[in-house]
Image (cartoon, rainbow, N blue to C red; front, side, top):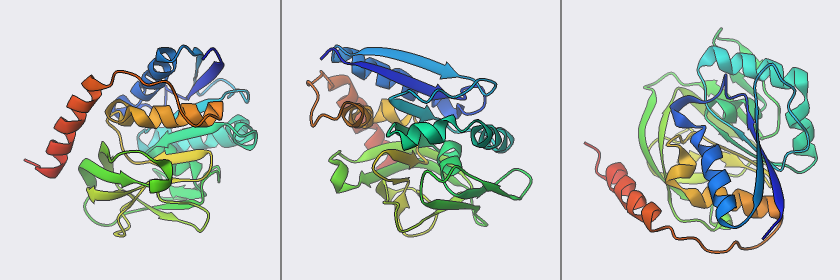
Length: 241
């Protein structure tokens, strides 16, 4: 494979908690292992978001940076235009909420999102969702169970055009009590799982690459290191201290 890919990491200065930038590193590595030429572009919040990317990654962030990121992404419009062009977008936690219709900001007010996912996020009244997650991904995506780490107060409700990214075996996921975790449509994905989630589950990176390249399969890689880590993380999630 010698196709070139443009990978865009959106607002690392505002949205990159819990090592979420590691997701960009994993996508880069998984692409290069397949002989793909990858150009990574880190776009800070004072820069325009390019519309010509193939894959866009957005991480989590604290409440005020989340509000600032949402304001700037709405004003800039580049990410929304990239989505309309068919780009693949993967978001985590605060980034996930921003991609929905609205969320509650640090001022306790409803903040308009980008509307790229049919979800609405509110602030939960109960205990914060914190801890390891083990979840079964939507069977249509064809991946093994996922592990991650969640730390959020958000409650995210899915609308009719959003599908649950996964369903939790352990953990709280979207916080709605129905077992759903994250959401997705054909090209836009959101999850509450940190980890970084792609370091724990590199098959997610492979999924994004296949979608961006419009192929059904990628050349295999040696994932023995990942399988060992995976077994450790599954054990941690199912047998909490």
